[in-house]
Image (cartoon, rainbow, N blue to C red; front, top):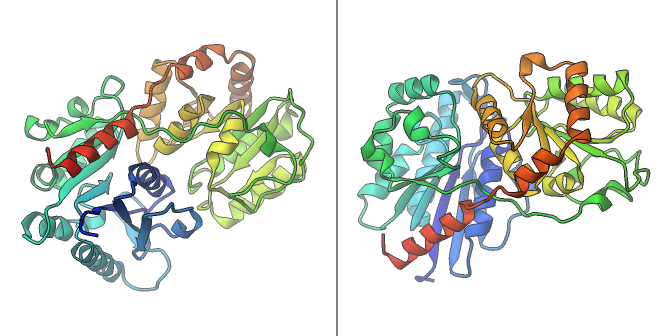
Length: 408
């Protein structure tokens, strides 16, 4: 299969679901009859996702993020450095064995603790393979000061110039300009391509998932409310992504319902990484309130398609899903350890694409007020999201075609 174009993708996956979900979304759209895609991932739940034909994965030992620079083994009981050595060895060995034509690194230019650098060096220096290397960045990394300081300390600017053929930014420059914000020099910025946001599959109507026996692709749900939803009832979906830091939002939402019984119906998805005691608390309280509960759902698009309002923390992938379904949304962005979600919420609010409630203002009363306002008067946001244009996959397909044709 010498005419097969091979794409290797790297997703370090040390916290939440964002990296692997974005990587899978891209892989699903770049695959072709003559394209094979292999994903390197540290996600402990990668096996729960559906992988399309010609896309597979190599699981490297998982690491869990404890703070901005502290990572520990997720499952195996060995020293952190030993686990990192294993990960680095697998990454380089996979690159050498797979011999990719294109290597796409998600978000972390160096990889976790510089673990991708040996593979990047080998791909750059070897005569055995001719490989383009691409760094994929979400729209916003963090606030400007923190990002610049971090990139200078870790010599990221040097790596961007030395190891990457192109840098794909999964956002619109007119909405947020990382070249300006992060003081990226021209020698690097000339390699940057703004793809636009990455769409997810739009669904016309998902209301049927709120009745009957639940839905495929969602784990450990409570179906105590099955069949009770009327066609005219408003539906609110609350999701916290991976869920590792989502308890406060879930808790406040349920406290709101416990204090003021709502006229709308609710579905909550905690995420698989919410600590077990917190997840059990949310599940038990949701059951008493007649709220449908899931801890994990592979097909969030279906839940979003059925909702009139989505409440989230504003992670990149969740926002792409919300906008793809053309839904009204309320963002409650976390502000630690990064300001990424807050900045994204402010950008979307300024464009009329979403409303947001600051983390320090999150109370049952304030949340209730925001939700009632958006359910009562959604039209300005409906109009704005209907006009939002996705170009991410279109641009990436164009770049892939150019790579395959050897014109770049």
